[in-house]
Amino acid sequence: MTSNTGFKEPGKEHGEGDSMMKKEAKRALIVIDVQNEYFDGKLPIEFPPVNCSFANILRAMDAADAAGLPVIVVENILKEDYPVFARGSQGAELNPAIAERKRSHLVTKSFPSGFAGTGLKEWLKERGIDTVAIVGYMTQNCDLSAAVHAIHLGFAVEFLSDATGAISLANRAGYASAEDIHRVVCVVLQSRFAAVMSTDEWVTLLEKGSEARRDTILGSLQKAREYGGTPR
Image (tube, rainbow, N blue to C red; front, side, top):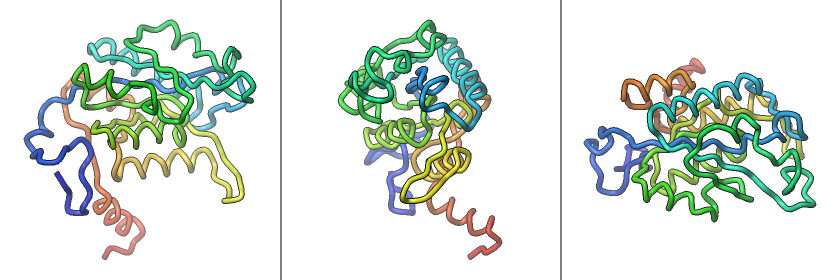
């Protein structure tokens, strides 16, 4: 179904009506790159604080397991001579708490998106999964890549904002703090690509079977104009 902005809404295939969106989602949790590099390695997560986001990642995994949802753990493994995530390095290893937790499937990747060349799409489709929830690192890189890739493959996406995290960046394009990066990515995702929510909200959603709240680009623009004091 196409929205009044001209874009197909997340999770809706051509020809599907609103009644299709009201069926109960069949979810899987994707845990992205919760590896040592982001804790005590070269890419320490800054915002939200890594101890907070990590605790929420574990909560999400436990909630998914309790609800009978598949839990997919994704790891980023690069060549032995790479400065980060090098194969065989301590930084490339999964955080021990993640490695020890129950999981349904392990995906090893070398591109930002966990869907790129890994067979993850096929694994999910074979099990009838239509909605993926994303937690892990980093917000602006592998999380964002997976979220955008997922909707192009026909999945609806849920993004747990307090179970993900970013780092600050500076380059020839400018500077952005980790907090600004995380906030902006979440706003952009909510406007078109995903339902952004807290871990508490997601756990409640699983328990009550309620629908995730989604926005549109047009609606988000209108709210922005009102927020800025210049409604049009």
